[in-house]
Length: 394
Ligand SMILES: [Zn+2]
View 1: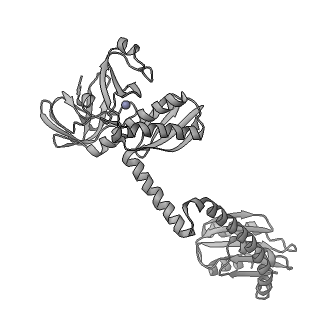
View 2 (view 1 turned 45 degrees about the horizontal axis):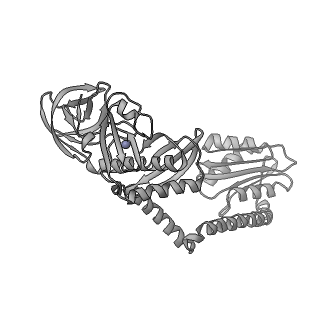
View 3 (view 1 turned 90 degrees about the horizontal axis):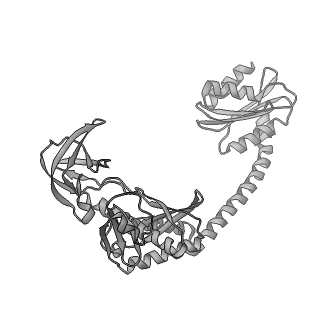
């Protein structure tokens, strides 16, 4: 058994210990100490990082036999006296999130009888899974209650109890392990069996912010951020919102409506532009047909056109194909090329076969019907495409 210093003092950053066992697993050295301040991954909380006897601690494992294994970047000899130091910024962040979880879970439990069935402390945010669905305004009420308890700066204390003693206590959740239990109490608010690390008073959590929620396995998954993480997320949102407000020249409350208006305007403009493009295509087709070249019994109308998008090139090719005896190949001006191929009703050339031959030679993709086909991503200059089609017709 390793003596776990964090059980009685989560604020221990440096400590001295002796290596009582050492080995290697999966190519990585590990060491077990007589005592440690390093927290191993367990109970939804990730492991600590830090330094041990000059080696970097890269992972910490809670082993079945009650020992804590420190996975290291280099080996330490058995019997060595070592000095350890945990990465305090990472640990304190975990303490804020974990204590915040106790407070938030208790708030959901006490106010809404929604029990926490699991907890995950992630790299960016944390989640609790509630056993039932809760309405949005009730999520906000529980969040409010949790923050009240944070700001009242209540003591968070640890004590140990036997299973028999614990059975007589109002624990929020049935303990999941046997033997001596470690109880974490938030004064007059929550009592839970937990092996994790917590701050000494709720005030150190700072703030608990619920960032999102979704229905999950018949209950509700609630994502939240505590302390410095909440401030970090606030800054990200602040910069994103400030940028959007500058771009649209509106106040924060006007933002959703302004975005909806911009989207509606954009949709309308696209509709108008489609109509104009089709009209323009009819005029442009006249000019194109006049400059067509007779090849193999048809008029080949092949040209690179500046300023037309995929839909416009398709309209142009289709407009050319309303004349008699034409094969239209309309191209964008620069690679990777967009291509629209269309044939007049009185000729038998398969436009989709022409396109397939082009993509086989120059790459890209596309498809269509014998009358009209469209593709994109062809790695060629327009002149190469025109030469390839001319060869095919001749
Ligand atoms: Zn805990």
